[in-house]
Image 1: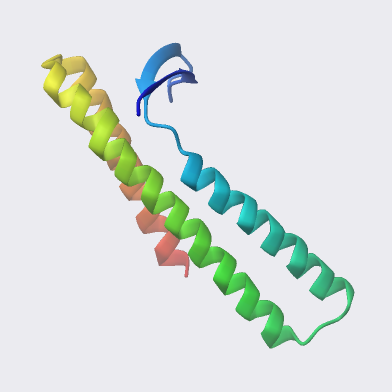
Image 2 (image 1 turned 90 degrees about the vertical axis):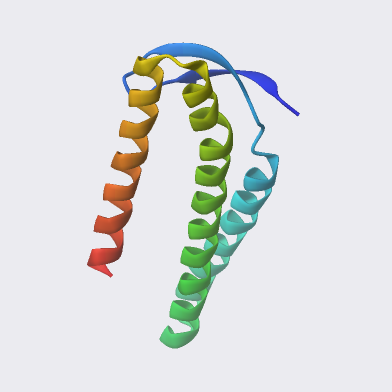
Length: 112
């Protein structure tokens, strides 16, 4: 189901567009928020380091999954719509966005 949303582009432009809601990702993020609070309590209670690290790895994996799902929706909807529009400026902007995302993704994994 598509909904109208108000967004700000990477260039700071205010736009209204039709998009797919991210309800599933919001639920995942709320769960992650709970996990983070749990890790904070673990640290406050001086729990075993390996247990804390295990929880942090779980949180990192959950965040990566949210990223993956949002990127998938972006490709399936926003990028596909831009390509179908036939407007070269829209296509170029979406391609540039994806290149930037992939470049940052690569940097993030190189640090690990």
